[in-house]
Image (cartoon, rainbow, N blue to C red; front, side):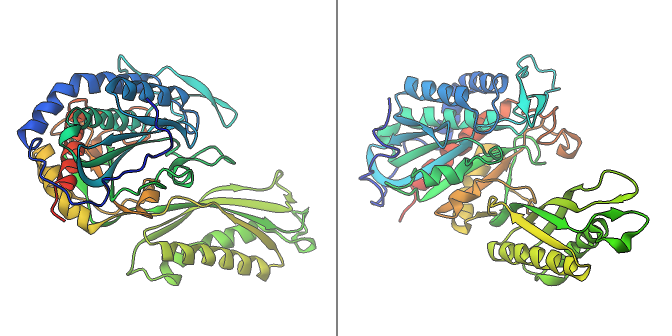
Length: 432
């Protein structure tokens, strides 16, 4: 089934909610247990068939076929290979969204799983394996499991549920648009913006089967920057005949480290500026014409992010000018910070604790980034971490996300499904 547009008009949005006691507590547990074998099967298919960002054609087709089997209307081919499904409830109420990301990473799997990925492809001119090393296979499977439960009981739903299957969360290839921002630009919320968007990410250093999150800033923004320093080439034995961009680069790198510690308010939020690549010169006794620096800027506040970007360009320009060098500065628009809405955090805390049977853990802000944050720029959002490792094992001793050995204990898929369903029901059943 296909929607006639990216999003059908929702007559039920913003009307008062009615009780949804038909699905709560033990009913959700039983429904999640019943769908668990299918969720595991979906997860293993996705895991064996990973695709890189903006190349998720097979993944999108598989999701569309599963939604077809469920009888859930959908629109495919959004932002490349993304899929939007819609479960329209039988009772009036708000619209809430569940989001799952779809893409894998250029990582050669080393888990030894019987369903391990053997997919290979070319990335940046090199042959590489492809793996769901960040757990997106689990995210899709859990979202589909929740969709199955909610759709089977849609006549009792006091509102509607949008299913967002998003490509290119890991970042589209250079020069290509993609990800959550492109989905928004293509109008997935044009006919109706969800009151809340909910997301779960597995791993991230949390004990197996437990949830962790925090109100407010959860994950950092990410901006890639490039500084080209232009000097004047000369003999290494006669540096005074030229302008040495290598010594300027060294001073720029040190100067950038004073921005976070001396030029922004460190009491407001943490920030990081890291240079990850230096490229310049070809011979020991030749001072080159130019040096290139590539790095990343991380922040937890949008205003601070803009302040840091301006300070990076100003600092590099001024240091270069002191040595008669010049710079070109470029910065790529990256994901803004993930910021959890206080209201949603408080509302969903009991649901997450019911799903896991454990207290909701607090977590420090994470300096990694997630473009789930784009949805939070236009509506309320909540993003939570679900521990992926074996029960009782210290998560810091396990392979982390993006590792070739990263794996999800499949018993926790059921926990994620329960959480998605319980959070949706909690929202739709809330008094307004």
